[in-house]
Length: 346
Ligand code: SAH
Picture 1: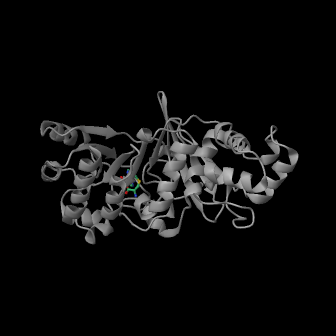
Picture 2: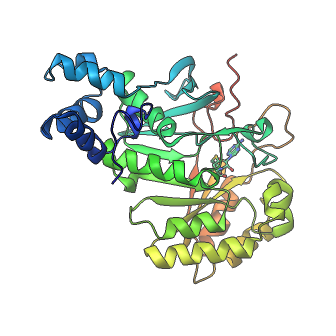
Picture 3: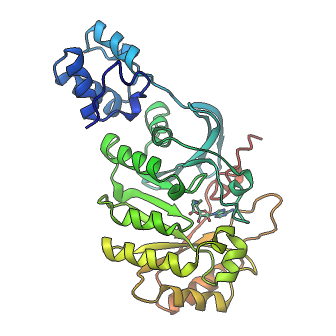
């Protein structure tokens, strides 16, 4: 347990405090433990983070809390709304830089697509975010705040979370875990409804395998032919596909779970019979995986196009006995689709 007293951690943001932290602080200040529960309810259940509004606390305590803990917020710089209801938000971050978050309603669900880094270091050839380069790592609470702000400030429902915005979650591992814990323990969202999407970092996948929370893992495969994959994803030249596959097998066996393979279907690049055949070989036991075919969202200036062979490719995989779903694009008219997050505000 981390002991928090006003003198030792004067700038710890409210969002990063655990219940134990708050209790320790209350004890050090001479307040009964239930005061910590009251603050917790205001912040995480009622969505109130302004200490002055916590009406069941004594005025002096409200004042002391405000002096002890900063409450940084995301500042909304820009919003775009898609015809399909998808909304894209551009935020100014408390610790510098800007990122985007996408809110996607579909039937009785509402999925938030969060960013885990400012920009991205991977430079995947088909992705708009890749063109930005990496500016900085997000703090765990900055990832958490993307969902908190939509839920409590904009009053939007949230049922699912996907780490599919800007950045590579497993290259910002500790912040991603901190946010994951925050989503489940602080915001009460079930980890079963949280998906971490990765380009395939074996070390990170093995660390995730040891976690107890029942979140979902998706791996951005895009081609099971190593040379083709390297052309699309520069990082693949440094991490062999076999190494990633081994890590996924360990992950699946440790957690008794299937993983999802994301496969963005690009015209003439990865949509032929030999590509389907390579996928079959990749999925062979002991790997247990299903395939999610992604409709490509074109990015201005990049040469890739969505494949017209989507249905045929799905049928080919289904005939091979591979569970294959299609993810249709959402929010593409306002550049809010997967891989279109490049922070243009026009
Ligand atoms: N770094 C993580 C999260 C990236 S975004 C990862 O690589 O998984 C989530 C998914 O969108 C990834 O599978 C990514 O490859 C895919 N993607 C990137 N650009 C896209 C585009 N323009 N259209 C459709 N999907 C895209």
